[in-house]
Length: 356
Image (tube, rainbow, N blue to C red; front, side, top):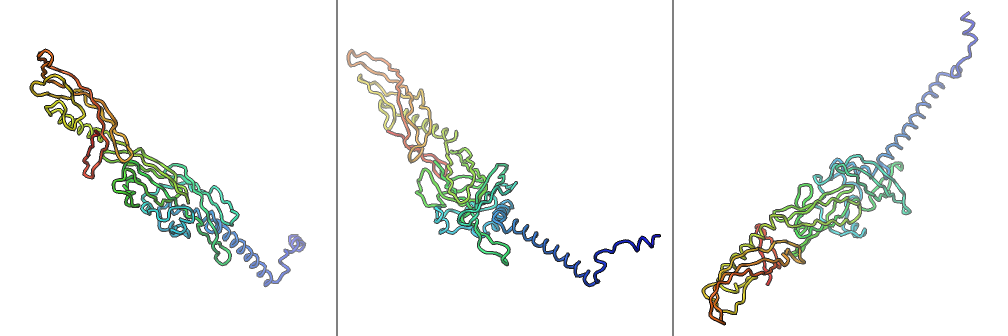
């Protein structure tokens, strides 16, 4: 019975083929699968590494790894003076901040968009988080050729770097990521400049924090996002510390105390004095009863103290020219003073110029 069923079953389509033909068909199928797999692999590699988005992402991945050398080695990443000038950027910005220990910690890197421009270039926007803060950068990428006619090659058509124009107001240094930099060293400026500024190349996408702290000056931290291919203005505003005010106050007190030691009605070079029409007997005696409050402000070329009021006490014996009577005069003489220039010396000393 089983033998009859076996004889009645239809033969497999390949059974009628010769062994050679069957082997040929099998290997042809394998070849088709390999070709499809190769095409899919090429497509995946092209999307990941040989597409505009893949090229831009590779750059940001290098920054995330703090591999500055690899990032700058990518085609078009390291700008020349001519390419910067063509973009309307300063030709010779400082490279001091193109260093790995200044970069923030980049995570969550992703491509937001990839738009083809009329020129054929691509505008690729990449987003990430820099030390937990969201940041983005838009890179202009163009094709330069291909590998075997299959895998396109790309370069940055515009620099992916930021040019940060950093101005330090009322000081000559700023801090970033634990480093202290002097804009005066990056760009020539007058030695006595009250504010200094310089241009610095920096990586994007990123978020940087700048500040200033010294014995006499401090500035609130200024955080700014870097914008690829753009010049970003940043201002660090240094203001007096309590130590600065205290030292100026001490010097002014000493100055006024020295004035009070002069036993004359009009102490020379001092902001207070008195005019008495009667005859003075003996020597006048001065003392300070109220020192002018000290406030320090930024002037056009340096620190100044605006007009402030105080009072000096005069004790003197006088004889009336009218009736010859003698009396002891005790009066508080109000006065006002200002400081036209306060200079911070390199040795942490302070020089004052008291206004007339």
